[in-house]
Length: 140
Image (cartoon, rainbow, N blue to C red; front, side, top):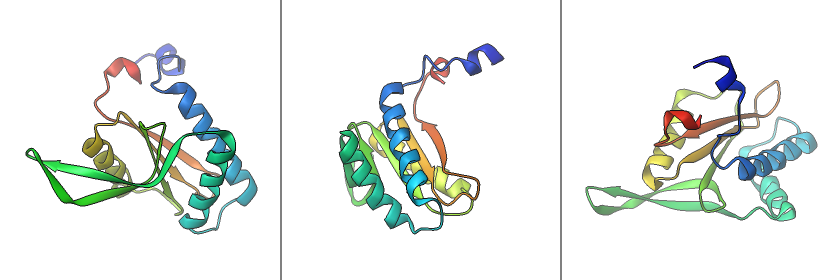
């Protein structure tokens, strides 16, 4: 992929929605900083979503289908925003592949196209990773 394409964000999916979600996340971090439990950030982010009019569902149960059968076991996403973006929170020093796998499985289970993996515990500031599911190469 050439550098021009890497710098062009105009073709990102859900660009406006993601911009609003990221704004809320950065505001929570600017007020709280690091060092709190994930549950504290989750509660604060819910307040910020409400203030900004961002539609969301907190601790949304996600169904898992196996070979045409809905399983009893459910995933629980921290937030689903705009009925199409999964927002998964962490408050740890460093994200690991298991955390990326978690959101990948959430996306796979729901067929949603975009997830945001957010880490409030990063020592150099809040960290947000975009995770995609079933997206054409040209989209990101």
